[in-house]
Image 1 (cartoon, rainbow, N blue to C red):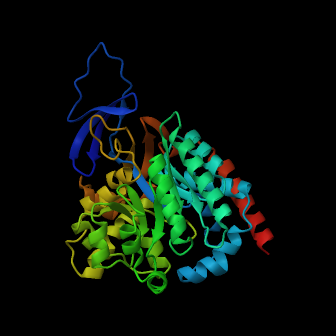
Image 2 (image 1 turned 45 degrees about the vertical axis):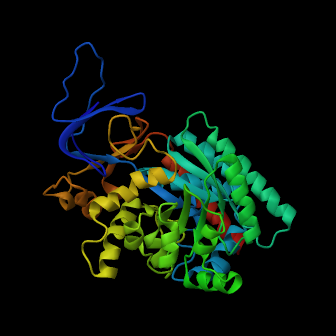
Image 3 (image 1 turned 90 degrees about the vertical axis):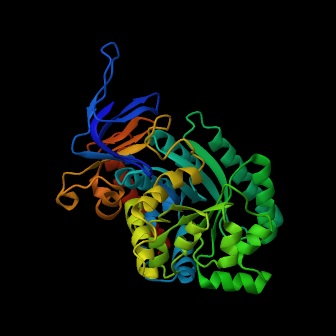
Amino acid sequence: MIKDTSIIDGETVIERGYVVIREGQFQEVGAGDYETNSNTRTHVISGKGKMMMPGLVNTHTHSPMTLLRGWSDDLELERWLSEKIWPAEAQMTEQMSEAGTNLALVEMIRSGTTMFSDMYHLNREGTARAVEETGMKALLTRGMITMFDSASVASEKLHKAVDYAKRCNASPTERLKGGLFPHAVYTNRFTFLEDVREAATKEQLPIQLHMSETKKEVADHLRTYGMRPAEHLLTGGILSEGDLLVHAVHVDEDEITLMNDKTTVSHNPLSNLKLGSGIAPIPHMHRRGVGISLGTDSAASNNTLDIFAEMRQAAMLHKGALQSAEVISSQEALRMATVNGARALGFLDSGFIQAGYAADFIMIDTRSAHLQPLTIDPATLVYAAGKNDVSDVYVNGRPLMTNKELLTIDEERVLYDANRARKQLVESSN
């Protein structure tokens, strides 16, 4: 039990209350003092001076790419990928990728992320193992780029991706899920995307892909197919309910109408801004019923995996862009960073601090000048709190970090391995 703590989620605010956790779930959540039964043995933790909130959810990242943090900055997406990132990734080994993934896990836990979606082509088995060992939750995918592959090679990539997703779904801990992630419409033939849809339907797997990130991508797709990307994917039967569109920066009114409640968008505001890609019409999508979650993209394009920063940016960016302080409230931004993300990744029992939900939560130490005088509401979490305020992280009631001490991963070793791998990558790239 955790007592004497403030509790905030996307629906509820309790200024002083308690939670009782049993078998990985919130058994009871209430205001005031807990009426204890003298016959019940309960481990009690004081939450005084702290605020409890749901664990943050990062619905789009590429964890091994922490090794490419600072590798290339201040370039637009197409040049950034073709001139800098893809050549570097061609030199990356499985061991390097594993070092990058572990670094990402440390960064995410420290910044309050309890669940994430990860796409890459290397170290997939190692990533699944690391998630299990650290105690986090994740939807993992094996990325697919097949534009220049033969039919047989493309088919083999899809087979491996399906097999990997099925093995993730078979995890005995139930903290892993799998999906299919064809990189984008511009890196795969549409016929291959049809094959992905067929496999996803057969195996009951969700699809994710990058879409409409830049104006150039949309213009190229229009020129090739005579339709915009979202229109093509939705009318062509590639996407269905439960699938996730990453970015969706350049979508028009007709596409948003098609998206409606069929798909969820992973909004990555900081990466989109840094790469000069644009500002997604999130308030309009939100009004039309499109589910909105938050992602960081990779540390190479952000350059952090900080969902607190994304949450604040999502709440503030659109106010300025539309010159309206009423769009994307702090409560809506909090939901995007928590329960909306959990739902987007298929963890339907996570995202709220309510009885019956998984005990995936974090504690914010409020005893800092920038959080005082303390107001117990979502605005404090969105506009004032940050990753450095996270003191405790729990998944299914298991502590991953307490009082800022990591419990399930050797941070010192991870930092050493990551810096060694980065040095090796620099040497091999030169």
